[in-house]
Image (cartoon, rainbow, N blue to C red):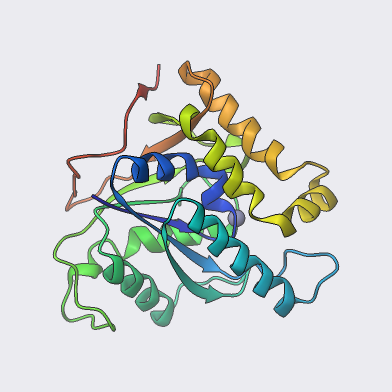
Amino acid sequence: MRVMAFSPHPDDVELFCAGALAKYKARGHDVAITLVTNGNVGSETLPPDEIARIRVQEARNSAAIINAEFHFLGYDDEFLYDSPDVRRAFIDVIRAFRPDLILCPDKDNDYIPDHTRTGQLVWDVHKMVTVPNIPTEHAPAEHTYELWYYDTGAGIGFTPEVYVDITDYWDKKAAMIEAHESQAAWLKDQYDVPATYYGETLSRFRGFQSGCAYAEAFRKARMFPQAVSPDALIPTFITP
Ligand SMILES: [Zn+2]
């Protein structure tokens, strides 16, 4: 199976679904991460171009920890909007990797604009990726993808349907979060929390809810046509 995760900003995939990605990878599935924006507002001391260069490299380093294929769309942080060109970019990156399953932010329940727009765009193009009359660099996909939304920051407004036990993959997830070295200072300055606290608290909370040490939470997006992957998200625990 081929699994692609969309990260609106450098570090979102790490915080919300890196454990599941590591678990998929360990089970022999192909994994890709698509970074949507360049993170160029994420510093109180460095100019946009410089922090963007650092953060994209950090995202590449993080993806390399689980040997995930890395794609980068290059939009400015906090300025992602729907447009014909943006839609084509989403369609094309999906056609390039041809995923069976996509993990992305929850378009209905996330509260960060770049997150909801990323989720909306991945939802919007689910049929378009197969349509020949929408040409992009890569050929149309043979089939659409199963789509799952991952958690929100601090779990606010998100009602999980499925929990993935990531206890055995917590070390990998932590290493991926820590690969974003520049954000340790940013999160401390902005929110007075260390990056590992932000990721670990949510994973421990979802684990607490589902009866294991560390978990990630997901909600399925439903549409027609409904792609169903044979190895759909590893449902080790279902919502009580
Ligand atoms: Zn984000």
